[in-house]
Length: 184
Image 1: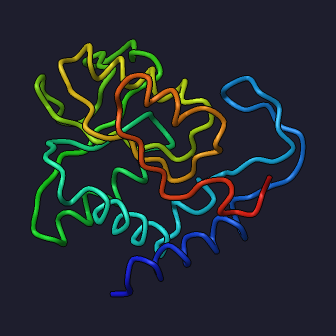
Image 2: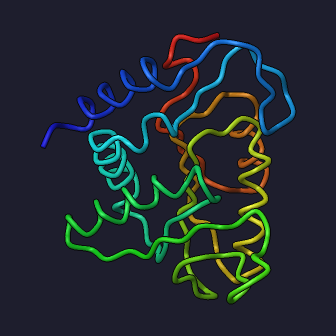
């Protein structure tokens, strides 16, 4: 297996080549941008998924936590990659995801996966801008009795998320920052 720096370089190359798109878009934060980083264009690739799982394992292996997850869609492939990496390293970790809204059928859960009150949680995101979407997940997890140990974002757009997490006393670790992509 390659070293952490080599893994970072491979994922960064994928981010720049396949996920970075230029053109006017409106972000989840409501802000307008002249570019978009679509991490779904890389997270479903077998190499990137394996590497992201290993990077998250490396960042979290010394933390005490019970579950890893985040918001539906963006965090699902990251969560899956991370729990597989943990298994390969001999540790079982539960994964979960938080729905935007409760299903109207079935068990009508907002948090899917094995999540228990008292769980210490690593929250994962594909992209953070202001941190607003992540904070909604933080509130859902906390209302369900969980405690956020750390927030990890594959890419931080450096537009206020770090400050927002700091205000709440949450440790925030972006794997990449927008400046790493060479985009100002």
